[in-house]
Length: 154
Image (cartoon, rainbow, N blue to C red):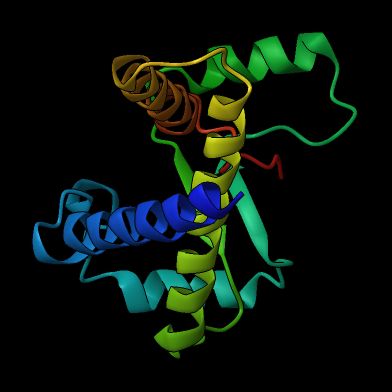
């Protein structure tokens, strides 16, 4: 138990530092967070729509749409622009709480990974490393390529 807690703290800090580097210093995520001079106009327009906070897929379908309606909408939208919008009515610029929450979640994730590894029968360092890479790849591919975390039909 003591090893898992120490590993959680150390692993959580390593992930936290990597996140800081990849989002801030190195800025690997720039393509997903591009600037547009139209941001004020876009946000003003969204604010006039009385949307509840949440994620929207533009070119989505309303709940209860039939398969025929889905197929017709897909055909009609082929070649047209589309977007994911994550809408919030206000922003909290207090990064302190967000950073603490992120660090604690990172530590919890590493603890859960340690728990999984503890269920393996005498794993070698190589097996643990490979398991960590595979787990990271699963999370990355699911998040980056399926985009299930962003979609909500409007």
